[in-house]
Every structure is written in structure tokens, then in C-alpha cells.
Image 1 (cartoon, rainbow, N blue to C red):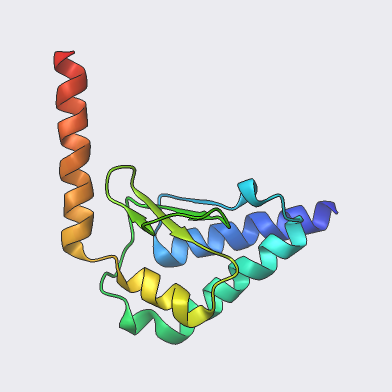
Image 2: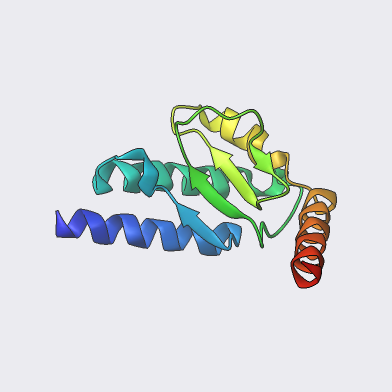
Length: 122
């Protein structure tokens, strides 16, 4: 069990570094550490095979959330979250990852600046 937790932590670190996410979160699914590690390693395999098809070289400052919750948009340009459904196919993951563009990252940064300015005024 402890080994599985270490595997999941290591897999999350590898994914975070390869994609350059600010953070990787898969803890809300209630999965075992071993299952989460397998899911993240599948994501790494996708990265190795298809990274040239991504529209950005770095996904920073986005956070990756692995979640089976239903959501309307995979990319939240207000919260800085990219959501992947673990039940999706690798091609569906690739489509979601390709939604991230430099324009979308800039939109998120702009939204963050507006929030910070509003909080300073309020």
C-alpha cells in the first residue's frame, strides 16, 4: 500500500514535470493509489507519443485535475484548471490537451490580474 502511494506520487511528479503543470490532483476520485498511478502513467504514455501535437510546450500555470465529475468545459480559464476524465480514451485526452493554446493561457493570466486588482480595491 505504501509502495502504491509512492508510485502515485512519483507518477504525479513525472506528469507535472513533463507537461509543466503547476500541480496535478487526482485525489478527489477516491481511487486506490495503484489505480491513480496507472492512470497517470497512461497520461505519460500519451505525452511521449503525442507531445508534438500539443499547441503549447508548457501547460504552466494550469493545474491538472483528474476527475470523473461532470463538467461543461474541460479548460477553466478563470480558475486555471484543466480537467481530464479518467474514463475518457487517450484520443479524448489528446483533444482536451489540444484545447490549451497560448491565447487561453494568456486569457487565464489576464483573468488572474483582474481578480488581484479587484481584491486590492475591495
